[in-house]
Amino acid sequence: MKFNTKIIHGGQQVDQETGAVMPPIFQTSTFAQTSPGKPMGDYGYSRTSNPTRTALENALASIENGNRGLAFSSGMAATDCLLRDYKAGDEIIAMDDLYGGTYRLFTKVYKNSGIKFHFIDMNDLEKFKSTINENTKMVWIETPTNPLMKVVDIEAISKITKKHNLLLAVDNTFATPYLQKPLELGADIVMHSATKYLSGHSDVIAGALIVKDEDLGKHLHFQQFATGATLGPMDSFLVLRGIKTLHLRMQRHCENATKVAEFLVNHPAVENVYYPGLKSHPNFEICQKQMPKGFGGMVSFTFKSGLKQDAITFLENLKIFTLAESLGGVESLANLPSMMSHASIPEEIRREVGISDDLVRLSVGIEDVEDLIEDLEKAFDKLRR
Ligand SMILES: *Cc1c(COP(=O)(O)O)cnc(C)c1O
Image 1 (spheres, rainbow, N blue to C red):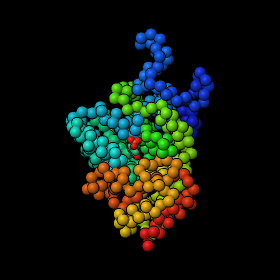
Image 2 (cartoon, rainbow, N blue to C red; image 1 turned 90 degrees about the horizontal axis):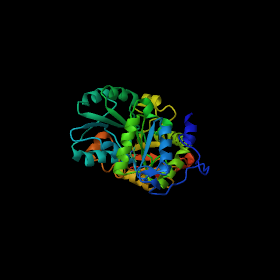
Image 3 (tube, protein in one colour; image 1 turned 30 degrees about the horizontal axis):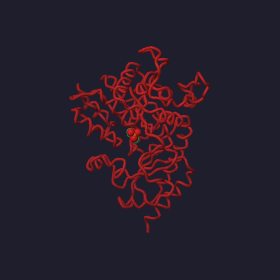
Image 4 (cartoon, protein in one colour; image 1 turned 180 degrees about the horizontal axis):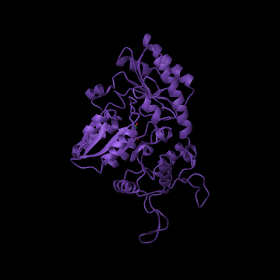
C-alpha cells in the first residue's frame, strides 16, 4: 500500500457489527465480562485499551511504517513514558535545539532523578561519538528543530547508535511521516506531538510513540497503561479524523511556507530566514536527501534591526496570522519563541543556541498564500511608522 492510501486505510477496517466506515467513539471506561477474568471481547478497561484508541494506534503504526503505535494524552506524556525507563547514572544525549517543553522535562523533572543529559550539536558526528560512554542509554533528536529548523542526518546518527547499542528516538512532529519516516532511516522510536500536524485542526492535545520492534512496543504499552496518560476515545477519534487529510494539508503547508520563506528572504526588514527549503540553509543537502517531498510548514526569521520591540509590534499587527502558541493547524499562527514557546529555556542557553529575542516563528497554514503574504507585508509596514 502506498502512503496516501495508508493515510486513509492503514490499519483500518469497517466496523464488523454495523458496517460503520469510521470507528465509533467507544465512550466507555469498562467492558463486560462473561465470567471473572473473561471479557466478552478484546477489551477490559479503557486505560489499558479502547477500540477507538486502537483504531488510531493502528493508523499511526501504519503511516510511520512501524509495528506498534501508542496514543497518549499529550506529546509530553509520550516523551515522559519513554524516559521512565532510565535511572540515576544513566546518560541521554540530546540535540542542543529542542522544543522548550522537552528541554524543561529533561532538565527540570528528570535531572532530579540523577539522569545526566548532554545537549550537543548533532551535526558534529565526531563530537557525538566522543560524548558516548558506557552509561549512555538513549539518543534524542528532533528534526527539523523547533524553532531554528536545524536538520540532522537521522541515517548517519542511527549507524552510530546501532554500533553502540543505544536507542534512537526521533521527535517527528515538524516533518510528519508525509515528509520523513525515521523508522525507515534506522531510528527505533518515533515520537509525535499529535496536537500539531497529525490532528491538524488545533482542536486536541495528543501524543504518540511508534516503534518497529514488537518487544519494545509491548514494553512501552505496559509503561503506558501502568502510568496512565492515555488518550481518550473522543480525542482519539479527532486525531484519526485529522490524519485522513494529512497528505493534502502537508502538501499545501509546504507550498505556502516555501512562498512565505521566499517573500521573507527578499524583504528589507528581515535579517535571517530559517527554512529547510532554502538553498542558504546550512543543512540543505541533508534536507533534500531526508525530506525529498518538501520542507514543512514552519518558517522562522529575525529582524534587520535586531529589536525585540520590532518583533512585538509586527506580531501585534498581524490580522490573518493569529498570535498563539502551537503550530501545525490549518490556520496560520505566529509566535515569539523567547517569550512564548521557548520561554522555559534559560536566557543564556537561548542565546548560545541562537534563539534571539527578535526571532519570530510562523506556522504557515493552508489559506491562500497571497493573503498570508499581504498580512505579513502590512505588519512590516507598521514598523516604519
Ligand atoms: C508541541 C511539541 C511537543 C509537545 O507536545 P504536546 O502535545 O504539546 O504535549 C513536543 N515536540 C515538539 C516538536 C512540539 O512542537
